[in-house]
Amino acid sequence: MEHILSLTKDNIQQVVDTSMQQIVVLAFWAQPQEESVAMLRTLEQIATQNTGRFVLAKVDCEAELEIANYFRIQSLPTTLILDKGQPVDGFAGVQDSAQVMAMLDKYLPPMWQLQLAQAKELLALSQVSAEDLATATVLLKEAHLGSNQAGEVSLVLADVYLMLGELTLAQAMLDKVGLADQDGYYQSLKAKLTLALDAADTPEIRDLQQKFEQNPNNLVLLLELSKALHAAHRDDEALALLFEVLRQDLSAENGAVKQTFMEILTALGQGNPIASQYRRKLYTLLY
Image (cartoon, rainbow, N blue to C red; front, side, top):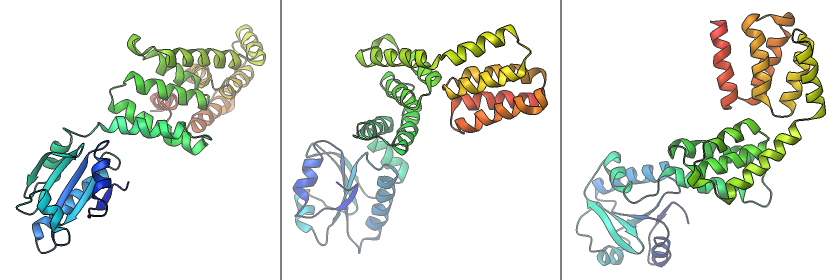
């Protein structure tokens, strides 16, 4: 159902049925009544800003007098909250956005729950595209912050990181999950992470690590190892190795170390927390 609609005799039963699952806000108004038009505009703006949290049903009392009489509307504007088919709250007259939201927040689910549900819908598609994963990641990051890092959000975000091959980020998410949320889903993700880490520990990387340990001043080996780690999505390790050299010499290997460091940061993107961490570290060296 659309998040903003006009309530009529033809769709009133559908709207009442919707209120069994989702809050419906009824806005009673009429064109000649200027205050009711202004209140309607405020409610439309709130509904647009909170798309998905509730349905706004507009009742033009000139055209739908029977509906206004059914709800015993005595003055305009009047706003009612419909929950499970029954009015549970409301007000007559004009209120500002903050007052309306204070009332609605008592009945609406928190935004993070809606974001979590939207992300799960994307991940449940038969074919999840790269764009779907990107959108789900943004939703889950916002939900993770808004929910104060709730375990149920951490698990889904860790799952997405595993899909993206971001093993360090997945590990960080799973490490934050408390005992109460360490259910079958958690155990499944831990197993996936273990398998992914094993797969990322390639013979090539082990060979390069051994050679570099034997020749810690060989920066050509360092660059090869860092690039191999990045290819295996072990970016935290790659950046840590490169940064240790940059701390001592920003122009190491004729600038090749810094260039590789910056290329990895660019590949990770602006929103990646590991990239953000190492950008800040680099700035401390530069400035």
